[in-house]
View 1 (cartoon, rainbow, N blue to C red):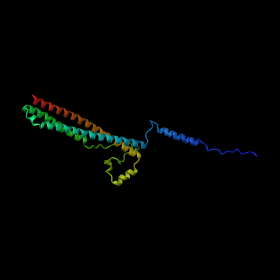
View 2 (cartoon, helix red, strand yellow; view 1 turned 90 degrees about the horizontal axis):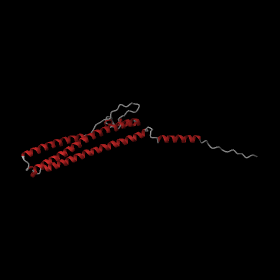
View 3 (spheres, rainbow, N blue to C red; view 1 turned 135 degrees about the vertical axis):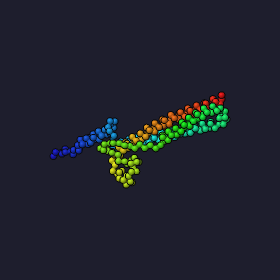
View 4 (cartoon, one colour; view 1 turned 180 degrees about the vertical axis):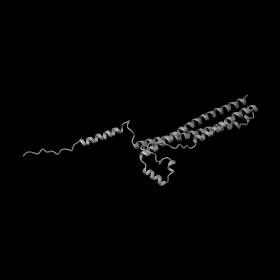
Length: 217
Protein backbone atom coordinates (compact mmCIF):
# COMPACT_ATOMS: atom_id res chain seq x y z
CA UNK A 1 0.00 0.00 0.00
CA UNK A 2 1.59 3.27 -1.01
CA UNK A 3 2.46 5.73 1.74
CA UNK A 4 0.71 9.05 1.41
CA UNK A 5 3.14 11.91 0.85
CA UNK A 6 0.54 14.64 1.16
CA UNK A 7 1.94 17.53 3.17
CA UNK A 8 -0.08 20.49 4.44
CA UNK A 9 1.12 23.47 2.53
CA UNK A 10 2.11 26.62 4.41
CA UNK A 11 0.13 29.88 3.82
CA UNK A 12 1.57 31.99 1.05
CA UNK A 13 4.16 34.55 2.10
CA UNK A 14 3.39 37.05 -0.59
CA UNK A 15 0.76 39.06 1.33
CA UNK A 16 3.01 39.30 4.38
CA UNK A 17 5.95 40.37 2.28
CA UNK A 18 3.81 42.90 0.49
CA UNK A 19 2.65 44.30 3.86
CA UNK A 20 6.24 44.54 5.07
CA UNK A 21 7.20 46.37 1.90
CA UNK A 22 4.40 48.89 2.43
CA UNK A 23 5.46 49.46 6.04
CA UNK A 24 9.07 49.85 4.96
CA UNK A 25 8.17 52.36 2.25
CA UNK A 26 6.05 54.34 4.75
CA UNK A 27 8.92 54.37 7.23
CA UNK A 28 11.36 55.48 4.56
CA UNK A 29 8.95 58.21 3.48
CA UNK A 30 8.80 59.50 7.07
CA UNK A 31 12.59 59.72 7.13
CA UNK A 32 12.74 61.76 3.93
CA UNK A 33 14.06 65.31 4.30
CA UNK A 34 11.90 66.59 1.44
CA UNK A 35 8.49 65.38 2.59
CA UNK A 36 5.97 67.90 3.98
CA UNK A 37 5.30 67.87 7.71
CA UNK A 38 2.26 66.13 9.06
CA UNK A 39 -0.41 68.02 10.99
CA UNK A 40 0.86 67.05 14.44
CA UNK A 41 4.45 67.64 13.40
CA UNK A 42 3.52 71.17 12.29
CA UNK A 43 1.76 71.73 15.60
CA UNK A 44 4.85 70.71 17.60
CA UNK A 45 7.16 72.77 15.38
CA UNK A 46 4.94 75.85 15.69
CA UNK A 47 4.80 75.46 19.46
CA UNK A 48 8.60 75.31 19.54
CA UNK A 49 8.75 78.47 17.41
CA UNK A 50 6.27 80.19 19.75
CA UNK A 51 8.31 79.23 22.82
CA UNK A 52 11.45 80.62 21.18
CA UNK A 53 9.65 83.88 20.33
CA UNK A 54 8.45 84.26 23.94
CA UNK A 55 11.96 83.54 25.25
CA UNK A 56 13.36 86.26 23.00
CA UNK A 57 10.67 88.68 24.17
CA UNK A 58 11.55 87.97 27.82
CA UNK A 59 15.23 88.49 27.01
CA UNK A 60 14.54 91.93 25.53
CA UNK A 61 12.59 92.82 28.69
CA UNK A 62 15.66 92.02 30.77
CA UNK A 63 17.86 94.04 28.40
CA UNK A 64 15.59 97.08 28.78
CA UNK A 65 15.58 96.77 32.58
CA UNK A 66 19.38 96.48 32.57
CA UNK A 67 19.61 99.71 30.56
CA UNK A 68 17.47 101.43 33.19
CA UNK A 69 19.79 100.16 35.94
CA UNK A 70 22.80 101.54 34.08
CA UNK A 71 21.07 104.88 33.62
CA UNK A 72 20.29 104.98 37.34
CA UNK A 73 23.97 104.41 38.08
CA UNK A 74 24.99 107.27 35.79
CA UNK A 75 22.49 109.62 37.42
CA UNK A 76 23.62 108.62 40.90
CA UNK A 77 27.26 109.31 40.00
CA UNK A 78 26.31 112.71 38.59
CA UNK A 79 24.28 113.63 41.68
CA UNK A 80 27.12 112.66 44.01
CA UNK A 81 29.58 114.67 41.94
CA UNK A 82 27.30 117.72 41.67
CA UNK A 83 26.60 117.86 45.41
CA UNK A 84 30.28 118.15 46.31
CA UNK A 85 30.26 121.68 47.66
CA UNK A 86 34.03 122.00 47.57
CA UNK A 87 33.95 121.47 43.80
CA UNK A 88 30.98 123.72 43.03
CA UNK A 89 32.37 126.58 45.15
CA UNK A 90 35.58 126.69 43.11
CA UNK A 91 33.76 127.40 39.83
CA UNK A 92 33.65 130.95 38.51
CA UNK A 93 30.32 132.34 37.24
CA UNK A 94 31.36 131.69 33.65
CA UNK A 95 32.52 128.18 34.44
CA UNK A 96 29.33 127.58 36.39
CA UNK A 97 27.23 128.73 33.42
CA UNK A 98 29.09 126.42 31.03
CA UNK A 99 28.70 123.51 33.44
CA UNK A 100 25.00 124.32 33.86
CA UNK A 101 24.43 124.24 30.10
CA UNK A 102 26.09 120.85 29.80
CA UNK A 103 24.13 119.55 32.80
CA UNK A 104 20.91 120.81 31.21
CA UNK A 105 21.75 118.88 28.04
CA UNK A 106 22.32 115.79 30.16
CA UNK A 107 18.95 116.23 31.88
CA UNK A 108 17.21 116.50 28.50
CA UNK A 109 18.94 113.33 27.33
CA UNK A 110 17.93 111.54 30.54
CA UNK A 111 14.31 112.58 30.03
CA UNK A 112 14.32 111.36 26.41
CA UNK A 113 15.94 108.13 27.61
CA UNK A 114 13.07 107.53 30.03
CA UNK A 115 10.55 108.09 27.23
CA UNK A 116 12.39 105.58 25.06
CA UNK A 117 12.47 103.07 27.91
CA UNK A 118 8.72 103.43 28.33
CA UNK A 119 8.29 102.91 24.60
CA UNK A 120 10.47 99.79 24.70
CA UNK A 121 8.73 98.25 27.72
CA UNK A 122 5.13 99.20 27.03
CA UNK A 123 2.82 96.27 26.27
CA UNK A 124 2.58 95.58 22.57
CA UNK A 125 -0.65 94.83 20.77
CA UNK A 126 -0.02 93.35 17.36
CA UNK A 127 -3.08 91.25 16.62
CA UNK A 128 -2.53 88.63 13.91
CA UNK A 129 -4.55 89.42 10.80
CA UNK A 130 -4.58 87.04 7.87
CA UNK A 131 -6.57 86.35 4.73
CA UNK A 132 -5.99 82.64 4.38
CA UNK A 133 -8.00 80.48 2.03
CA UNK A 134 -10.77 78.72 3.93
CA UNK A 135 -9.65 75.42 2.46
CA UNK A 136 -6.42 75.72 4.45
CA UNK A 137 -8.27 76.22 7.70
CA UNK A 138 -9.23 79.67 8.90
CA UNK A 139 -8.28 80.63 12.49
CA UNK A 140 -11.29 80.34 14.79
CA UNK A 141 -9.87 82.40 17.67
CA UNK A 142 -9.26 79.78 20.33
CA UNK A 143 -5.74 80.85 21.29
CA UNK A 144 -5.32 84.62 20.97
CA UNK A 145 -6.60 86.33 24.12
CA UNK A 146 -8.46 89.15 22.35
CA UNK A 147 -10.46 86.57 20.42
CA UNK A 148 -11.05 84.39 23.47
CA UNK A 149 -12.60 87.14 25.60
CA UNK A 150 -15.14 88.03 22.91
CA UNK A 151 -16.95 84.76 23.65
CA UNK A 152 -18.63 83.38 26.72
CA UNK A 153 -17.15 80.38 28.51
CA UNK A 154 -19.59 78.00 26.84
CA UNK A 155 -18.89 79.46 23.40
CA UNK A 156 -15.17 79.17 23.97
CA UNK A 157 -15.48 75.52 25.04
CA UNK A 158 -17.68 74.82 22.01
CA UNK A 159 -15.08 76.43 19.73
CA UNK A 160 -12.40 74.16 21.16
CA UNK A 161 -14.63 71.11 20.75
CA UNK A 162 -15.14 71.88 17.06
CA UNK A 163 -11.70 73.15 16.09
CA UNK A 164 -9.69 71.14 13.58
CA UNK A 165 -5.96 70.60 13.63
CA UNK A 166 -5.66 72.64 10.40
CA UNK A 167 -7.43 75.60 12.01
CA UNK A 168 -5.31 75.29 15.13
CA UNK A 169 -2.08 75.20 13.12
CA UNK A 170 -3.18 78.21 11.08
CA UNK A 171 -3.95 80.23 14.19
CA UNK A 172 -0.70 79.18 15.84
CA UNK A 173 1.28 80.19 12.74
CA UNK A 174 -0.44 83.61 12.82
CA UNK A 175 0.51 83.98 16.49
CA UNK A 176 4.14 83.13 15.78
CA UNK A 177 4.16 85.80 13.07
CA UNK A 178 2.62 88.30 15.51
CA UNK A 179 5.25 87.57 18.17
CA UNK A 180 8.03 87.96 15.60
CA UNK A 181 6.67 91.40 14.66
CA UNK A 182 6.64 92.37 18.34
CA UNK A 183 10.21 91.14 18.77
CA UNK A 184 11.38 93.17 15.77
CA UNK A 185 9.78 96.33 17.20
CA UNK A 186 11.28 95.62 20.63
CA UNK A 187 14.72 95.03 19.11
CA UNK A 188 14.60 98.37 17.27
CA UNK A 189 13.48 100.13 20.47
CA UNK A 190 16.32 98.55 22.44
CA UNK A 191 18.87 99.59 19.83
CA UNK A 192 17.74 103.21 20.14
CA UNK A 193 17.71 102.89 23.93
CA UNK A 194 21.31 101.67 24.18
CA UNK A 195 22.51 104.22 21.63
CA UNK A 196 20.97 106.91 23.82
CA UNK A 197 22.59 105.38 26.89
CA UNK A 198 25.94 105.60 25.12
CA UNK A 199 25.37 109.31 24.47
CA UNK A 200 24.50 109.87 28.13
CA UNK A 201 27.68 108.12 29.23
CA UNK A 202 29.80 110.22 26.88
CA UNK A 203 28.11 113.42 28.03
CA UNK A 204 28.65 112.51 31.68
CA UNK A 205 32.33 111.96 30.96
CA UNK A 206 32.46 115.37 29.25
CA UNK A 207 30.85 116.98 32.30
CA UNK A 208 33.41 115.40 34.61
CA UNK A 209 36.29 116.46 32.40
CA UNK A 210 35.01 120.06 32.17
CA UNK A 211 34.44 120.39 35.91
CA UNK A 212 37.80 118.85 36.79
CA UNK A 213 39.62 121.05 34.29
CA UNK A 214 37.90 124.15 35.73
CA UNK A 215 38.71 123.29 39.32
CA UNK A 216 42.36 122.52 38.58
CA UNK A 217 43.00 125.62 36.47
